[in-house]
Amino acid sequence: KAGVTQTPRYLIKTRGQQVTLSCSPISGHRSVSWYQQTPGQGLQFLFEYFSETQRNKGNFPGRFSGRQFSNSRSEMNVSTLELGDSALYLCASSSGTGGYSPLHFGNGTRLTVT
Amino acid sequence: AQSVTQPDIHITVSEGASLELRCNYSYGATPYLFWYVQSPGQGLQLLLKYFSGDTLVQGIKGFEAEFKRSQSSFNLRKPSVHWSDAAEYFCAVGVQTGANNLFFGTGTRLTVIP
Image (cartoon, rainbow over all chains, first blue to last red; front, side, top):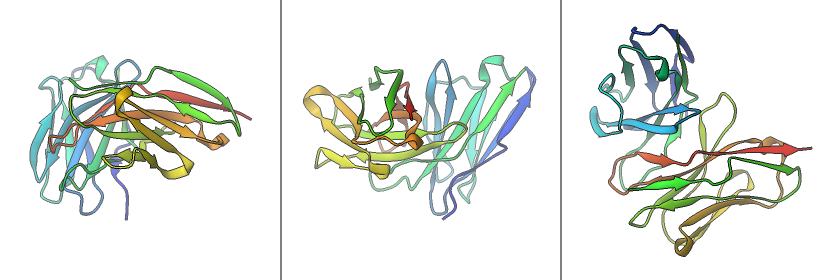
């Protein structure tokens, strides 16, 4: 099976712009979670989608949003970018059913805001 | 509230030596516990997980971890470290709400000396 695919791998944006990141989960996985990784804050949970519905949300401002499509692919959007949004954004998928299923991570999208 | 503490930011060991990475968690109920490894520029790979049952769990790459409820710990061990084990290691706790949000520790960076 192909793993979790995130595109693009690298992005450079300017403050005030918006950005959309994409994640294709492992085939058959219905849950997609997003995490932000920074040297200062470590790994922080952004949100999780399951069957096109946001099931859980972390403590991030409303500038961070996401969605999931019927094929389980997910996008994450950040509007009005700030310098502090520079980070590695990781997507993870799981089956999301029947108890706790382990997360499988993609290689991430490295976002740099200048 | 749930939290994970990895007290060692950086550990250096010689190749062939044994390894123990510490992890303490805080969670009111029985936790789901995980160890992930991250190589530079990569996403996170699951090493092993503990859900219930036998408190000593075996993972990939020769790693094992022991769940000790009385100490709220889930330490990762390997009897003989290989140079390829150099990476960053993250301990994580999963909450039992059916949503796939993990709480991660700040990570331990492992350096292996030839």
